[in-house]
Image (cartoon, rainbow, N blue to C red; front, top):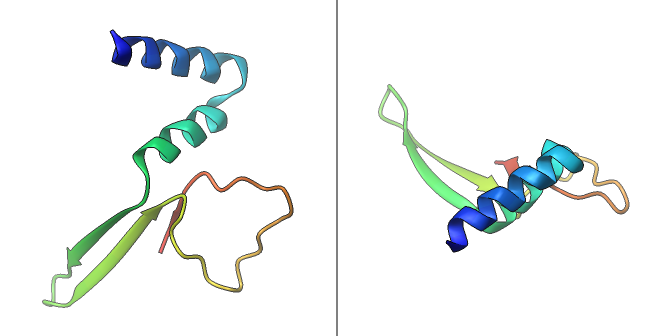
Amino acid sequence: MGGRSFFVALVIVSFLAGYPYAALILNRILGTNTSTLLEHDGRHSVLTMGPNAPRPDWVPMMPRAWVITTAH
C-alpha cells in the first residue's frame, strides 16, 4: 500500500501545485544516474542525468532556485 499512497500523493501535488513540483519530488527520489552511450562510429560517451549532475560554469544558477533535473 505504500507505493499506491505515494502515487496518489504525487497526483494530488501535481494537481494542486503543478507538475514541476511533482517532477521535483520524483527526480529527487530517483537521484542522479550515469549511462554509457555507444555512438554509431564506435566512440563512447557518458551521460549524467539528475538533480545533482554537474553543470557548466556558464549556466547561471539563480538565487533560491530549485534544480529539477539536468544532464551533462
